[in-house]
Length: 370
Image (tube, rainbow, N blue to C red; front, side, top):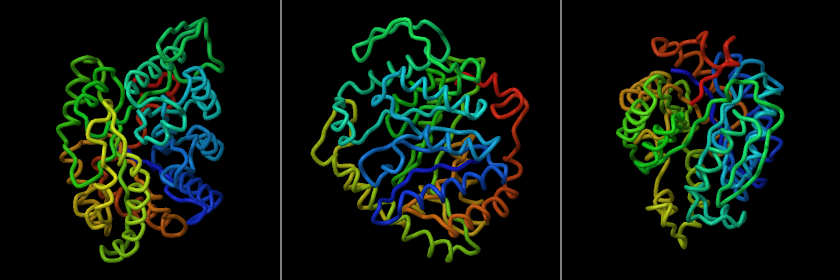
């Protein structure tokens, strides 16, 4: 298992300034590299405290690249339906060059109605737009003189600059939440899978379906699964709960607020999303801890929780969400330090350093084509 940090800002000027937030997460990114973690991941959102402090994950990762030398830089995720593929591919290649080949690209379909409305992109048909854009980005990163003609965009003879450092291109990941067909399709396309177990249950058979589909269509390669989970480690379970619960409650409050736009929205491409704000709004911090959508406790408790999670999911990468609810400063740093010093050593059988044929090693310019 590899480890990293996953950031999804859920604060606003009324709770934390953007400058303070960026200072904290950049500092945590430097800590992660020094501690030997493998990834920093940042998510794209707009117009709301839920993610609004990061409209451009690639801009954030360029800043991380300037302050680090080894750690992998993952978008988690960019929202391709809001971007032209030439723009997105060019920006990916630029950050890949700035970081000397450390970028990995996570894509997500986007799911917040107010974002689609603001960009004047219809939700119905977004699945087809998503696949067309990701495919075009793939072609632009791996080919020159590219022609595309789709219902969503068209261009001719396009060769993006700079060319990517990693060959044939930076690795791709795609996020899935609850639709079985999405997990199967990601495996069929041969991408890595990003999951964020949330709510009161997560069905590990969805991950099994992804792996089976991947191996059926790409028997010469291995599927990869990365999971992002809010994590807080303290000396005792009681102390961890005392620190984490107010921030988990804030996390749920901001998330459910963003989802209220689903109260009056329905889309054929987003089955079962209508009314989702009520479901998240009914959850509590305790629910997140009990059902495993947040990992909170002493080092021993966190090791046990991760072990149980791994029995079901067998993730290749575990990404710690350390900024949930606007958590930052000394509390976030202490939690990360406790994870590195007291949790990772107890997971030593599952944790290893970069292998010689992995991205981030001397062979990074020949990164995997997932």
